[in-house]
Length: 127
Image (cartoon, rainbow, N blue to C red):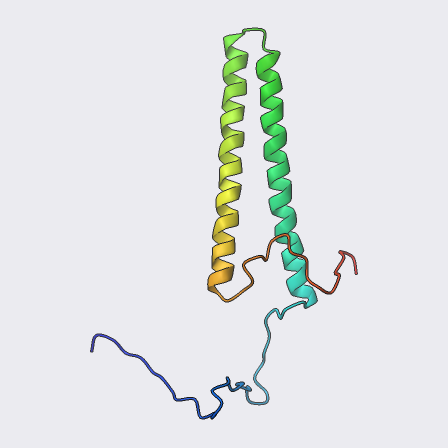
């Protein structure tokens, strides 16, 4: 027995999906679309990514300025180069995390434009 699968025929003549209702007393949950928990999670993830990108750009600018004002001191140039390298690596890690989370959300059936796409209900933090 190499493969095992189970398929059930759809008894609906129109072929439309039949909703599955859990029995009474079984807890249900999760984050539905445009519910406060989902919107808060979306806001938090967007905030973390935005702050990470802003900090990486700030560190790139600071290290560039430090290279300019180093006055030819090899030790200062080396320190600024190291800071620049780590800032760029951080930016790449943020972009990679963004891509991984987007991919996982779309594979789980979510909206791939989850990030920076506010819900239609006009949610604002602090509601």
